[in-house]
Length: 118
Image 1 (tube, rainbow, N blue to C red):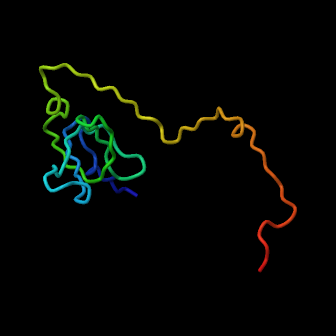
Image 2 (cartoon, one colour):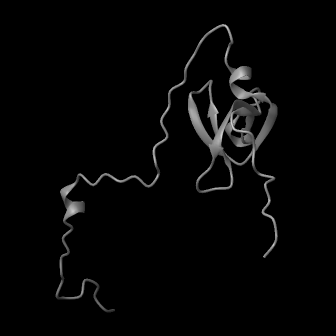
Image 3 (cartoon, rainbow, N blue to C red):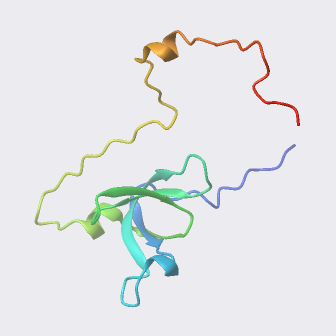
């Protein structure tokens, strides 16, 4: 169609990100945002994947503010301490086919109707 796709939603990988906390989930003195590192894009929503280093948790959120001038690792981690964060992202569509019932499913047939007519 000749129309260029929008790239306004694309952000620098590894930049500093601030994830907004909803008002109902925080108390009066809690921070309004949590600092993290942008590690990717959400799979099923239009949001972003943010690694919250303080909580050691990966979250997906739409309400994110970015500081693309700073790399998240430099801003979040102490440069004097060498730290490595290990985490694994599991595929959402992964299934365990080790169960015999899923390998060889059985179907039961019923001769009489299960629901009676009123």
